[in-house]
Image 1 (cartoon, rainbow, N blue to C red):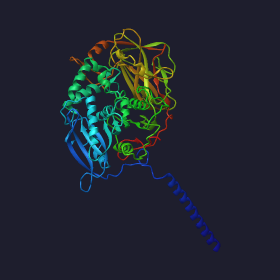
Image 2 (cartoon, rainbow, N blue to C red):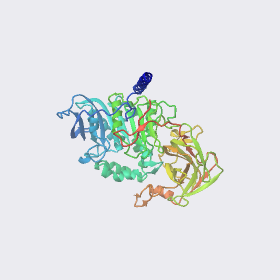
Image 3 (cartoon, one colour):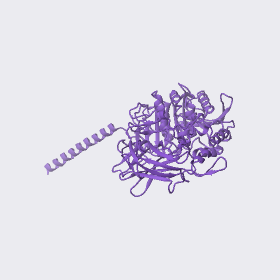
Image 4 (tube, rainbow, N blue to C red):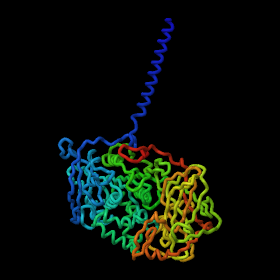
Length: 612
């Protein structure tokens, strides 16, 4: 019995020793792994606890250089115990509010609360834009006068008693665009050290209001909604410009008025400020997702031409980053991550956001919803051509052939379709998409619409990308056209400075940009390109025509409509430089997904790894 007892004792001791060793190993592993990652980019930061109260002063009048006074609301940190201004000096966050200022409105942006920043050690200023809100003076739509007001407000904000001299910009849509237009006038060594222009285009004319000379609904939509959303002071300029554009005046083309609102061309001056810029955009918004602006800023920072392609291997800076999710205009914003950007660049805190990341694009695949870290635009340097044939998209040029279209709404004889073979493995489209089309018209103009679809085996379909072109404005701005190694278009760009009526019956080579994307094509899915002559009712609602006529479909100027009426188009397949679809097509595993999640302050899944 004694020997059994000793055996049990020894076994118990052995188990205890093994258990202790196991626990020690687990503790060592936990110590090595460190604390659990936080649900914010970098995994080491979360919003600081609110330590201040908020003191608000409304409708303070700030005098601009021309004597006009702009109303501003000032939110400053306060001592929670007595409500008096808190001791210390703080960075300023400035938003310039573009819309009607309603007392019950509460915050400058629906997803941004000034108190969130003020309680954590920032001064927050919401300033009305001249011609909107509480102001009655005539304003300009993102013009020089508006930008200079922004400069004056920046300089004034640094004189506030509690300001430490550093300024950040924040805002979505017009409040994002006026950050960029103001930055172009700030000059070097500006007080503005960080910006978050959200929901912004790069080139207003090409990106937001037209597709290669065809007006989008956003242009008449802006004009008609202006009295309700901007205020009386802004109406005179917009009314004059809109009417001029519909009559075929300078504003109908990419001239001086639009070039003043082209942030790509202003990228060099924006970069001169030294500000760290986080572009925050959505795939479902109008335009190109901020990718062209991102490339322009990176090019300007490396002293390259701002309109040049940023091919893989190009030098990039973590000072200019892009967050691009699968959401629409004004969606996907998170003030928690915005605070993290300001903590990094305004306060110099180590938040886990790399200032020197090699992958400054953080973009979401529209199919898998995975987040990917990328560096350049174009995203890949290998393009795959699919050639148009008799209803087909093929890897090789097809025999000579023709297809017929007429200028009409989608329906019989007004659309042509071209389908690829099913893909046997998952592939991904990553970047801008281009079409080359050889076509002739029976009259002196054409209008083509392109839609690229993803067709599933079960019969369901999804729109991947789209583009349009007006034939009389097809001439290329060749120095700004990006081409692959074979000379095929990757990102075409039309000049859009004037109209040149076509010669009836003459074949014209068109090169058209379809909006960029990140899109996974699943196994057994097919691509389908639809070419039609005009959009349907759903895509472009009714708008009144100048002179009393009405048109269904995207709005057309009268002289353009007259050139298009009754048109018959002949599409040519095969031959030299054959009609084709040029795709940024790579294996779906070409880019690895990164950690993602929904921060406590967010409504959407966001990337939580922004790269080193």
